[in-house]
Length: 459
Ligand code: GDP
Ligand code: ZN
Image 1 (spheres, rainbow, N blue to C red):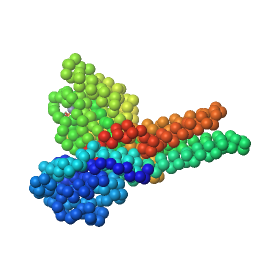
Image 2: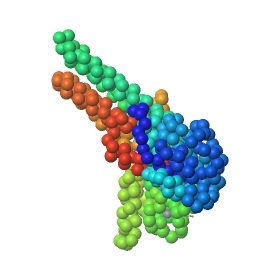
Image 3: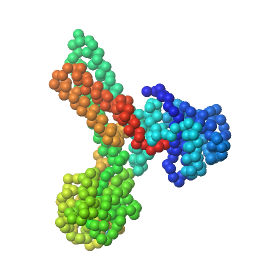
Image 4: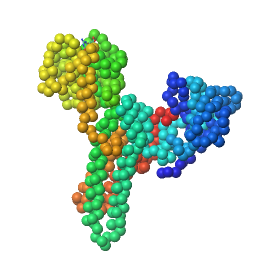
């Protein structure tokens, strides 16, 4: 996969649309230099050395009108992100000017890039594999430093290397089996099955290790879906605001005012939390309220973590008990709020394991760090990183590894049941294919198109 496929030349604004002082219009493809040359004055870009930056002006080639004063970076193939010629025009003039620069380039024959198309070219030109492409996407979306670190590590290709190694080992065994089958006179059947089953077990172990990283990886990547539940007025919205460190949810003295479900993002020691304040899951006859309650129930079921909030200043009641019961099987933290007021009950009244109950005051912002530590403990304690830092970051990777794991199981069952060796071989080959899909080596075209369409334009 080292050849460079020839594509048309694409262009897009690759910095976030908005206030920024500098925006970048990026071009990639055969014609990148010629096109950029036609719309700029200054040096002849086709003659400059690779990886140099030049001062100039962008002009409208028809009217000769100057559109912006710019710096132009020239990066020639193959040492570029896409492995094609890349030109980046750094504009100064704000969104309007940047758009005009893009327009003239399109007027000259560049095509507006699709979302993720630059990264897709890097993949198609063999510069990166699919796991690395996915980490580019993760980088763009990363909400915390920790999530960013993980994406950077993946961009480095650690998962890719690991998978490549496993595939290579499987391939070697398959080749050996092939040789043995070709020389039946040596009566190598026993040796062959032994070799296959040893390799299958080895790979199985490594995949099991890797699958263990999925939880941490996916949490960092997608966030921990956290439902804040509790009867009206216990302080759910106040807690949400403190955790999110922003005023967003409506805090009121009237019970049941948080009608709808409110979502917020919080960064807890680098763990992204997707917080949902629910309207409560009490029984109700009010139609509007019922919609909110139904949604809350769903949110609760889908949550990775439940923060059950109780009001320490009021005695526990029926509604609290129902919630305690309903959430008992989920990963949860029981929180007694309003510690700044006189307390109507004790932690041990709520749970036999009183240590796991956290006492806080949302208004005084006391005890919040204990919640944060508890979350860290619940989801990240005891997870061992792979030596090489490979981490699974999404459901696609996990799904394929589970399939590969099943194929290995089939290999071992087949051997145990004395199945013909060429059938066992098929299962081993399946495993090899499934691993290849993770890195994109045996990924179908539709999948690739679908994956890259999740990117934003300009990446
Ligand atoms: P929710 O209905 O569960 O979302 O509760 P809110 O967050 O809207 O809070 C209800 C009322 O309790 C508001 O008047 C808050 O100011 C108050 N409140 C929330 N947390 C505390 C706390 O820790 N101490 C005290 N004294 N009042 C609180
Ligand atoms: Zn509320």
